[in-house]
Structure formats: C-alpha cells, structure tokens
Length: 129
Image 1: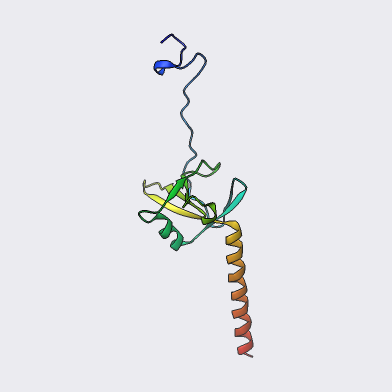
Image 2: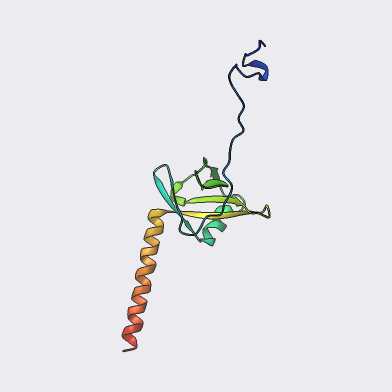
C-alpha cells in the first residue's frame, strides 16, 4: 500500500492509535443513583436478583461505559426494567456483581416496606395500650 493509505494496517496520515481509557472499577455504595439513557437506577442490596441474573445460562447484554463508574455493566435479559448488573474487579482480582434496580421499582418497594413498617408500629402501639 502507499504510505498514508488505510490498507495493510497502515493508518491514514494524521491518524493516531489511542488506547481506550477505562475508569477504575470502584465499588459503589448502596443507594447510589445512576442514569442510563433517561432511566434511573439505584444501587440495591438484592442477593436473590444477583443470584438469578448471574447463574449459568442467564442472558446478560453488555452495556456501554457509565461515566464515573468502573467495571462492566450488563442488562439482564436485555431489558432495562430488570435493572443492571455491574461487575467490579476487587483489589484481590476477584470479580463481584453489584445490582442496580430500576428507580421506579425501587421507590415503589421502599414505599410499601415503609408503609408496612408504620402499620406494624401502629399495631404494636395499639396492642400495648
């Protein structure tokens, strides 16, 4: 190929190879919120979903980079309503999955849990008087 051509692995003049940059895979905190394509997700402690979405044979679709968060994000069953799985490489080089719940679902579950806790508290107060 001619110098400066694009064939044979030679880059056109003025082009440079730049290695992709990756943000460090820092573990997130429970309750952190991220936005992906207009949808919001909350970092939640949900062992049953992590287990279900990371078992052998589970379908996970790789997502794009999320600024400020390292590791790899995947979408269970290719459906954002299922939440996100973030794979974080720990200092000992082991990999840890973290679950991000879709925020509307998170808020609904929290409201129900809070209402149940308040009802139980009121019932306990009524039965002790």
